[in-house]
Length: 371
Ligand code: NAD
Ligand code: IPM
Ligand code: MN
Figure 1 (tube, protein in one colour):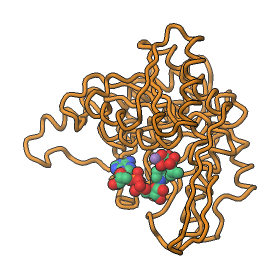
Figure 2: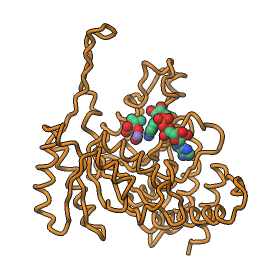
Figure 3: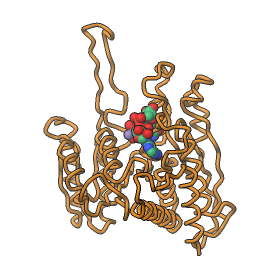
Figure 4: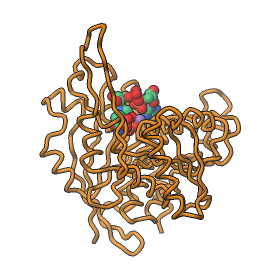
């Protein structure tokens, strides 16, 4: 049987709560002990990595070279969320986000950060009339202002100068733009929108725009347009149905995908994949959200984002039927939430389910979908 060796990093806050449900669904989707998926038997062999703020506070380690090497030897990675309470003074010197999450993304060359957004049937968007929303943000994952190529001098004085340098290479832009075109060409609407800020960020903006123009010539079926990032936020709210594939830099993609989560029914539904399309390194799947310290430990986090991240993982592992079953089960669960809400009479008539109850319901739905 095929074995997927999976590195699991539950992380901090609600990370372990949502990953517990995602693993239940993964086991149910491929069969915990070698059930046959399409024509192939698949088992998942999990290695648990205790990493994040909790581990740092205990041992002082963020991500050792040995951790990194061990994680890199897996086929794929499933991550909850890492990071403590923003501003916690005990974590000031650690920078878990940079030392752990970004180190993994950079070391494993996750140059595509894939973040799909769909308003599922029955899900309530805060927008009054969003239309049919189904787009994907292809966020560049290894460059831009995230590289840490900055510095500060005269820190703490009135003359402090703090620089944050955005790095954009022809190589890095070309490969992510090409991925976005290939994705757009594979989708029914075949539309690609470059989002940048070329009116102000003229050097990197020019590189992105020229790269898109050049690759567009190879994809005559894909229609291409451009939006400045500030204007893009307007259309996310007024007409999100206009988008199909969006390609953008690391920081714009970060901000736009939290907004995308909010308009599509909540950040608790937003999934992501950090993909290395070459297959040289394992790809990493995680919800878009963070460790949500404000609701951690209460079993009230929505595990759907982590579960939909498992669907992205199954797609990337070449198991599209298992991925589709997970999405179907999630779609059913979201629709039943909507039915419960519409049947409700009082304000609190929709029984709030725990994190585990949502996971269990999706596992049960998967069971009834199984052939
Ligand atoms: P956050 O995404 O953790 O939380 C923002 C808001 O969304 C909070 O009100 C939270 O309760 C809510 N929320 C998040 N996930 C939810 C879910 N599944 N169900 C219901 N509500 C949910 O963002 P933040 O507060 O800015 O960051 C908290 C910590 O997480 C920080 O340390 C940050 O650096 C880290 N972070 C980590 C990742 C990651 O590891 N991938 C991503 C983003 C933020
Ligand atoms: C995300 C997060 C990360 C990012 C942080 C925690 C480094 O916000 O995955 O969206 O900015 O990429
Ligand atoms: Mn983010």
